[in-house]
Image (cartoon, rainbow, N blue to C red):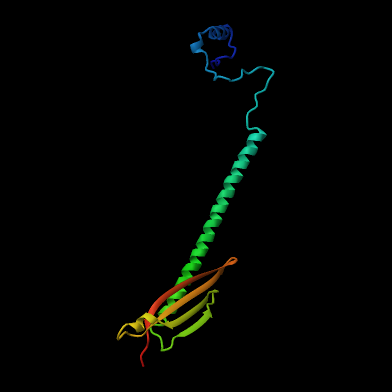
Length: 166
């Protein structure tokens, strides 16, 4: 087995070691600027300092906090959008259930099983009576209300429907 460079292997290894130290600077091993020369009495410690670890954990905690808030905000927006969509569907269903109105109009209210309150009101549409030979129309308004935290939200649809002639 051949000895490695730098290990003593008799006179020949010693001569190679002495010859290497006399090589010009361009051939010497590269040492980055500011690198400490290893001294026999000083140990080189590798790894992260306590300060570096604390800074890394702080950055990670801030990033996780921002991610948590973004996720929580997305869930809140999705829930609010779902409730508004369900309110719109409820209002559309109320209006679709009344294709015409009996003379005099009406007002109804109620609550759905999933917590929406609704009001349906039919009032005569005054502008239709001003026109000659106009069909009597009613303004049909469906309003749906629901709670979202401390605030009450609402959704309203309005349309015109004809009066049912008897």
